[in-house]
Amino acid sequence: MEVRVNGVTVELEKGESLLQAAERAGFKVPTLCHHPAVPAQGSCRVCMVEEEGSGRLLTACDTPAREGMSILLDTERVLEARRYALRLIFSGHPVHCEVCEAANDCRLRELAAEMGLSGRELPLSQDFRPVMDANPFYHRDLSKCISCGLCVRACQEIQGVGNYEMLGRGPHARPGTVLDTHLEASVCEFCGLCASLCPVGALFQRPYLHRGAEERRVTTICPYCGVGCSLVLKVRGNRIVGVEAGVEGSVNGWSLCVKGRYGLDFVDHPDRLRKPLLRKDGELVEAEWEEALGYVASRLAEIRERHGPDSIAFLASAKATNEENYLLQKFARAVVGTNNVDHCARL
Ligand code: FES
Image 1 (spheres, rainbow, N blue to C red):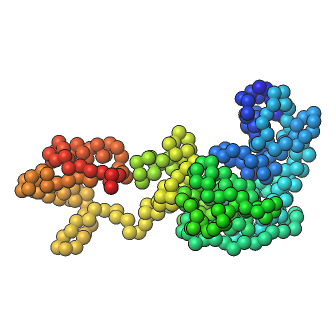
Image 2: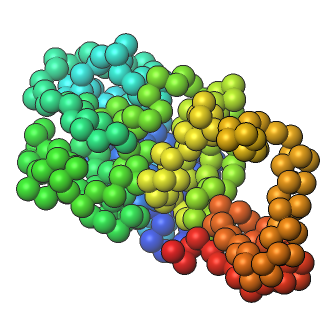
């Protein structure tokens, strides 16, 4: 079907939205409660567009395009409707950006800057809630929640856990768990997906608190299990300051488990072994790789000679690549002469 956006004609499939039409035509429409990974909900009203002819204001993210429709993206009515929607959201959101961990990464603040709003146009009317931070992974500060519902949809639609639902009505609606228990008493898996999609500071990932803004991104593979999830590391200097799922062409899409998202602190932990250790006179001392490998080779040969090849066993690791694991079993069978090979994934 054909749809016109600001006078540009684009081709759309049935069921595609006005937001997709605008993007295909090369225009940007501001969004807040929308995320490509979850079904649109149309709750924030920031993505308003105007239908030419009828003059109707429509939310672009959840309105399906119709054949022959023509929409305008930046009429004065549209801009004012978006500004008004944002003012209303700010009226329930404390503007304490100086002390908000998400200040540099807040979609609401970014939109306010784009639209020339301070966020204090309407008086603040909200119920303050205590910060919930009993777990080490993220804190919930529902005073900052803008009820966009992204965390609810992410938990239900992507993670498939369904730990959250919206509780309360109108300005008091907030995401909560069944019976509104703390996360620690719920079925939460602490995968961090909800916190990674939160557009403000209501759900904040604690392991990456006070680490500064990212300087570059590195795409890599998770070092834990054999699924091979794709990770995007946010890096500042040589330090990881955040982790996101690597979505493009990955097996994991938007998902990560708690280890992949929050378990990478070992990378620069001071206790991490950086050199092999050899026990000498009862003490573990640092050695060069050549010396350590030479020692292992001579001991393996000695044990094999004295007790036979089946006195030696090899345990492969899920943290190694398939190729490395293949080489290990080849070494065990062809060089040492034993079939005593196992893998930690079977334990
Ligand atoms: Fe469309 Fe929120 S982004 S209504």
